[in-house]
Length: 468
Image (tube, rainbow, N blue to C red; front, side, top):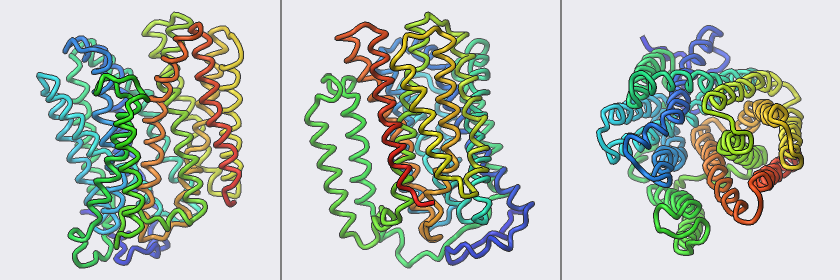
């Protein structure tokens, strides 16, 4: 029978003290499995992408849009899930998201043509959009304040762990079964996740105002979605309009128009999608910006590291697969440690150390011609530094948010994070392409590493402003 002992009818966090340690442990397991499910799917998909390309005989720019078909709705729908969760109940939306992900995985499994595969990827993205923000909101609602950092660190550690397992499972499926079968594994994982979530996640229904759905800020959803979509299109416009990235002024104009209209509308809306007052909470706004910068670095490095090792050092597919697994392990090694430190008075200090480590490692990659073992060592060091910051950012961002706004805040925070990742990969690709036109390949990579390192320097300055 589904537990209800964490139920909160008024959106407050008063139920924390009555929650047993056993119940919290079951709750955390229930939250960890869906994150493992989505991360496993993404890491297996990365391994299968060359086989998918060859199966359909598609060009590289079209291949990129198979990934974008997932990441774009994933980013766009995050704030919607968060805001709806505050009124409809986080548990129901959580289960609905897993259901959509399962349906999308089934379409991908059965896909006989590219449109069907793209449709499945879109549904997967829409389904998983709610998982990250709703997990954060549920932890913020249910766990005592002195345990939130540890809980968020433990929950966050599942992602790197699944990233280590995914390439191995995905490679086996592609080599011996066919690329479609990576989605069979996703369906199995989704069914397990649905069972555990339904069993362990409590009802967190808030008092829904009359006419909540009728008065919901649907125009805000449309304008924010338009801003994010047009901006991503602007960053990678060639496949859509034939114009070089960052040069199609029509997409830039649409981006600015939607962004300005959204900003003006949200200031006047009765129940806005984005409560701008949340950004008056210093730690929330500052930590959201720092988290976006952190994921910008992670997205850029996710794109660059394998290309760098292949192009500069001639590393083959097997070596790249092993290194990718070890890189995920480096992040995992410090993620939970960062969470434990975040519960004390060291949260801000942990962030400063994290961004300093990443700045130094990227400076090394940007400055020196290195043997392959040294380059891999610096990239692993960057992963170690990145893992330290994750739970501390989660904890600081959500610490001062009112309970009845936890879903909205978690949605906005998650959008900032994953938009940073999406933009990071796109901008790194454009910068590398442009740099290759005017300098040798090694110099081009060094220039891009230096640009990414600059964002770490900005993150360091931003994190200094956080309140202890």
